Length: 169
Image (cartoon, rainbow, N blue to C red; front, side):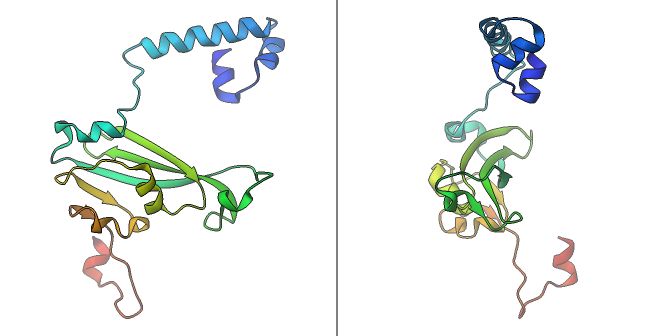
């Protein structure tokens, strides 16, 4: 029942009908299993953006990227979630902060799809120490004004096309 709930996210009413138990029992069973998993040490929560202040992240490399997830068209305030980037659909933007060495997710931030990657970064107010190295994509143009230790891919222009050597990098 728990796997069906997680995979299909059915209501307790429909789960109860499928497994021939009441809605209340469905809720109690699911809550009981989720509480056990949360208390288990293997089931870890995200460190959170305040963890970036710790000495552990000194001289570490952090990757920041944002992705868009399609959602159903909202009935009201459609402009806020509309993104012309992903097949002109309505989206939610998710920013993920990952430690490069361990590939663990440190923190996430969410916004409506219309928001630019760097605007989401500024809005999330992530505290980044000066000695942390950042790797970001070209959606974060302007981050180097606030943070010196940033690696951003160079953009190709008509006047300055990539050379063979920089293409390989």
